[in-house]
Each structure stands twice: as structure tokens, then as C-alpha cells.
Image 1 (cartoon, rainbow, N blue to C red):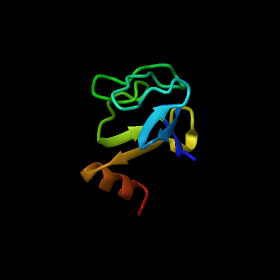
Image 2 (image 1 turned 90 degrees about the vertical axis):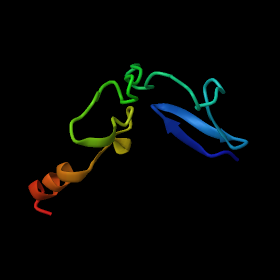
Image 3 (image 1 turned 90 degrees about the horizontal axis):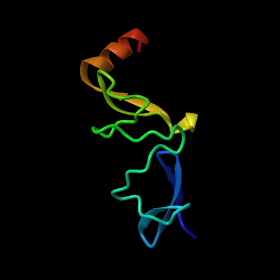
Image 4 (image 1 turned 180 degrees about the vertical axis):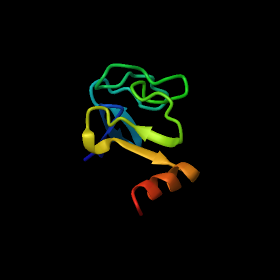
Length: 88
């Protein structure tokens, strides 16, 4: 049995310790495949094309068509401001 997951909207599986795309069998390492949802390539900085560079954000993912996979990670004062706005 192999482990399965997804990478930028593409189904992947671990085969003999290496993650590969299910549809092509190609390794994920070094891949420059476009998003499986919108078809856009990542920016030169490695960001999701639909998000670009987000001010105050450390890390983010659009979810590539899977709403539950989308996230935004803030740090420093931006995170403190968010907590304050949320009254946490």
C-alpha cells in the first residue's frame, strides 16, 4: 500500500520512499507543474500565482481547489494585530 496526498492540486503517492505524480509517475522533487486547479505556475518566488506576494504573510496556500487545504500564516506584529482584531 502506498501513501497518497496532493501537491498543488495534483494527486501524488509515495512509491519506494519517493513522492510521484499519480497521473504521470514523475517525481515531485524539482517539478514545475502548474496548479492542478487554475493552471497557473508558481511565481518566481514560489508563491501561488493566484495569491502573489501577500504583505505580512509568512506562508500561504490557495488550496488548489480544495477549500479545506487553504491557509494563511502570519508572523510578528501582523499576527499580533490579527489577534487584537479578533479580540483574542
